[in-house]
Image (cartoon, rainbow, N blue to C red; front, top):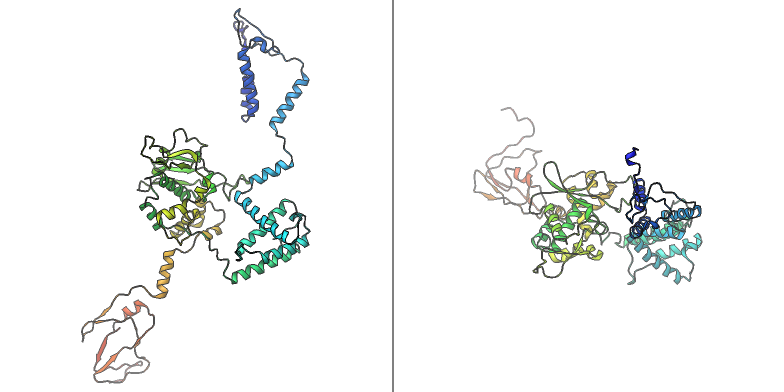
Length: 527
């Protein structure tokens, strides 16, 4: 250092240490940061005596309120430094016991699975109490529990006395299985058939499922049906979809995200943040939306390498129902300064009249309720006057996605990239024959399609209408005798026939006037 800067002094602040630490560790603890900020504030308020442990210099006669130090000299405070290290250790690693770990695991469990397990276990517990069994399930010996569960499978009924669906009873046993696994019971109910543990329960469950199938159960009567193009068009016509109202706009944005991003009905929409969907522009100028996927049913995050190979995108169409147009309108109708990355994507629509001065804002600074989001399609069905006997749920939109792509012969492997499925076989459970195809097949088998009235032309008579009966000509295996003025009318039978065969027969339904006819199957005789 040159003589010109020999008296150079370093302005020191606790925040300098914070900056140095952040350069090394960007995830520095927020509590430590707050402490250093408070120290810095005290230094600004006091005099140079605020930092007595540092060697201070004042190079001017003016009074200064800043701690100035050339080289900090730390006194021998070994005990204090050890306490500081202990404090930093406590801040870096939280104190957590085994119960805390289990509570964390419980919170990470699927919410719907947790609700179902709670209900199922409460039902099993009521059954055990009727059997005078008060012990916890995980404390009952395997032989006794096997007998109790097999009895439960045979006797459980709904409160109205009706039988449960086979899959429901299977779900009861699965909930018990999860509880036993959590408590490290050591035996699996639905394990290997060679395992004698819970053999009676497994055999009873199989027999009960067969019995219920004989009674007509097991056909999944509550299974959601897919939406159709005609139904979606009807919803637009009746302003249930579109941009004419806050609710219609919200419905449209939700439907686009569900169909084109493949988001599942409730949970994945409810956890969506505004920053998860970004508006971009392709090299050719086409605008598109891209999804940054969060946790899903099939990609929970347990496997860090398990991510979508292709990020779902929604491209603009420049048509009447352009999804980019609806997204931009939705963005403009949100409250100001409520489009940050972590703000909720779906906001509650205003229910008051939009004829006031704030009519440009259609939505509240409030996340839409989970129950209301779960009933979006049901609400659209009622408002749009769709078939009340058709079971439509939020899942119907996701089924529409798979159904439409398969109908247009898109490969299942490509569909998986949009729907987010990990197994090709899962696509089959989403797709089924459409209602229109079923109707065509039924008409074909019933032969109820309208038939054209055919007119046959003959050289000796007027035009005669053709009947719908088939024509059976005399067998040509024997020669036909000579006849004078023979009127030969083809007989008719009341059976279903092929239309093309009737048209191709030039004599079908016609009256033939024949003076002489010789037919030989063999070579004609020499004259």
